[in-house]
Length: 124
Image (tube, rainbow, N blue to C red):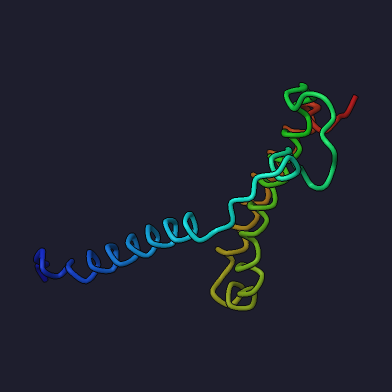
């Protein structure tokens, strides 16, 4: 099936309508919104806490490493859910799914052992 440029016309029309709506909304909020600037509104606000010192104060990279490792291992473990849901079908179809999950879990475990050996989770 060959597509012609006319086939893309509905997509182009939808894009133009969306961009027009976005532009109209931005312009409307600019002209219709309140314009009261007070000292309280212009003050920096972060989670209801008063600002103390410089925001550029350096702190340990360990925080970021733990956060990244959490996301990494969390996403890897999410891949186990569909396998667990279809566990009976996987067993019926043979042991291939079992070996695939075993290989996956061993890769996750090797990564975790590497993290432990590097001492990334040790706080000083």
